[in-house]
Image 1 (cartoon, rainbow, N blue to C red):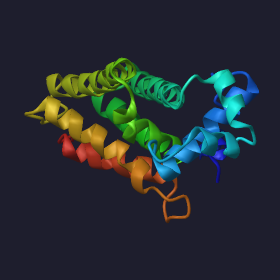
Image 2: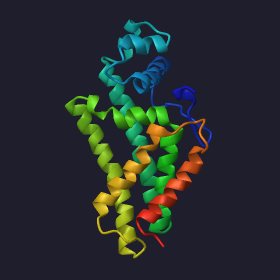
Image 3: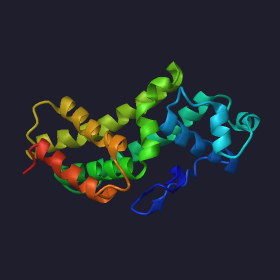
Image 4: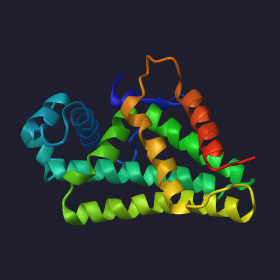
Length: 207
């Protein structure tokens, strides 16, 4: 299955943010190459070849290989923030919102596992300025989950003594799904999302 065909609940990943079509094709090719070979082992020639284009054509749309990684990472992290923010600011109790946040976040990491591996595990390949931007987005993810847990503690729904550490554990658990999820495995992204939501609620002592 190609990156372009990865799904969560049947929704095709469109990369609608990326135009024109040639730039989108190069980005999808870069995701596949980075996930398969790693950022440092991938060349611009590799990326262009996967996209069916010449190496020279790549530089029309992206000045450097790092610019490609930065754009992939920014789009992915913006999506992650949106998923968690939607859950965090939704209606319902803290228990319901945390379950929604975890299941949605896990489904994304399973259904978009190739993209998610690049987004989550190639951060250190970025230069200082680009890395700083992505770190700020990661902090927003942390803040959304931490806010739900704090709400649950205040409401007496959760029994958590270390909110910061628990937030880190929850996010780490969700993100790791991208590393091991197999589309041919016994569970669907929805099933893994439901399982992890249950595990996290147990972790925070939800009734």
